[in-house]
Length: 365
Image (cartoon, rainbow, N blue to C red; front, side):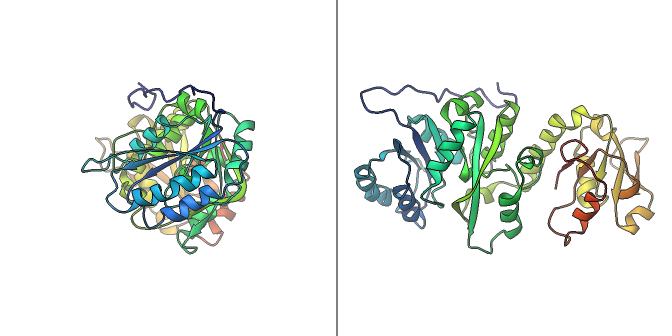
């Protein structure tokens, strides 16, 4: 059993046989009803400038549209280009989910490195080459990159965050609602490290398989590195699998990871935000960690004037947690204020305290 409580994975590490040159990189592409975008995606595979041995491992998760025809159209073109194509899949009535499809694509592949690509995204020609070079320097890391969004005005704040988190914040901001600090469609890592961490959870639709793997990766001592070039066009649309994951599922896993990685090591802390999100975090904590909350802090005079937050859902005696102005509160803080939403006001307040992220505070926004 893994530390996250998931079943121990089936080994995905295999040895290549035969006299062909070893495969350097396997592109891992799960496909489910992707005919609208698949041609662009496979064109970007064809255009890679990587000089090593590359293969494309596609797993068709019971598509009912024209995806399979597009793949078969591209297969001889890619193989003529020197890119081996492995196509697996099933024809069950229902798809088995992104985690299952990724695992199957990995199992049927042979590359020493794994490059993940969603069937609705487009790679820049230098992507595989640059991430392959980075992965050799950081063998226990998940390698990401910067992205452009398609359409350009979709999720602007999220896209800014993806591209602007600092190298240190790739590890300190793993608790935010944005999810992994390098997004799944940009992942690149060694097969050996992937196998060491495990495999994707296969619980089907509604499972944040990328977030759960990312947490297990960090638990295993893995690092996070970003190639600071735009190497992927990251598409936004309503059919994307990420929309099937509920906010409550994400919240529950984030709280659990925060408690395990941070709160377990703190004797006391302050929640920055006496409003809805801060109170929700407080209520979501285990009783042991709720007892460590010495105060809420805020800038809202109305919240501060009330003096206390009373946890009405608890047994008697009901806890009464002080509500303070942020300048009167003591670190460490868990910050439940969303970044990049107050015209810089919150960020200025935080900077005024001269605190260190990852020691004096963590973002949980």
